[in-house]
Image (cartoon, rainbow, N blue to C red; front, side, top):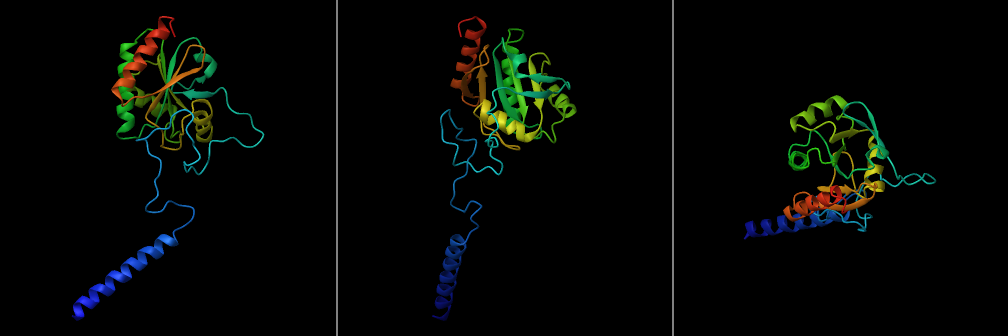
Length: 220
């Protein structure tokens, strides 16, 4: 009988403690039942970004113009501007070189696209979301792993705050240090976004290839 009473007391104390901890969890962090954003459900154009926690939001300071162009450092050390890319379609992706899985798979998909569209007037722009690690030298070594053509497949780095703004303001992608979506952004020859494609979805990847082919042939 005494053992049953002790077990009951332990259960009551445990439940009470759990409720107390939940009630008084820090206001600035997620609780045990809170849902946080993951790459499993990428945002689409027009989605509400307000629910995404970001210690340094990509929204520019008051009075500063919204970005419409960019310039970043390529692995060669050369500065590449968005104006330099106009005239041909290009695909933008975000990654970081120390990512052990998703980024590798993502860049393998770009390698497939590079091989399929070799010399056909489409470029690939991979922007690092860990620029402190991804120096031009680091990016040269990383690009070599995928046989990246330096003329067709660009690897870009720069200031992290600036890259956050490029992602959100120009390419409508929430990015942060070592964080990015699993989506390719297709930009047409005029420099306008044509669409967003989840590379891990075979149907979307095929649709991307068809759209690129149409642009190359002058139909897009």
